[in-house]
Length: 263
Image (cartoon, rainbow, N blue to C red; front, side):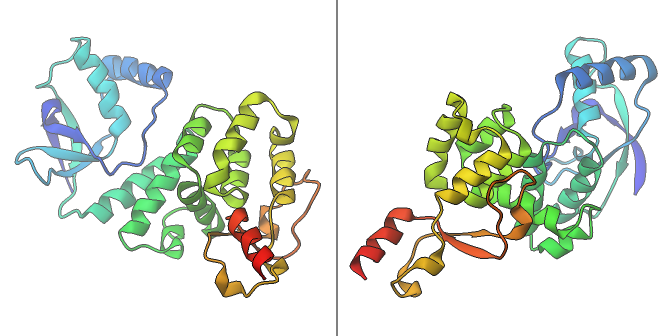
């Protein structure tokens, strides 16, 4: 990689960066620091894949946004330069990997942004075991983040981002609540229903409402609905009901009971 001074106007955030949220207070503090001290850490970028002479930011997007605040406040000019390490060649996979490595080292990356980054790596051909090698948290951590990405509805993700419930509750929803039932659960949480408030109580409530497929009296292959998996690793310390073995659950309850009645 080579280090260059590149005009702000020629730098662009990457659409592949998993981070979608930046704390405005931290951004303001960083902008003040840059105004007085300058950029103390290089950004990393690659030649822009569609704009000749321009660059796509791989790492340092928050520094870019802080500098952008100064430009909008007319305290800096679009022609002012920033120190940038230019990586080439650099594939989309390289961009996502480097962005993930930088972002997970920070404590303010939202779990859904982290999950989206892992999902993008998966889309580009990486397995959870591959992703585990990039970060220190381990394979189970990667699996749980991907579960958030895959199993939560758009509305559930929005509620989680807005702070309607904590990460542990989001994990419980992703593990034990089919997408078709999540809107109802979100309404119960918003209404303050005590059976849906703490993560442990929510877990017990959802487990009580679940139907293990092993209880089916019909041939298992007749069930075509989605399947959720409960396992001991999901247990929370204060949950009233503990899972002691891996259990497959029928996500489509109506389909399950229809088959039971017809058996």
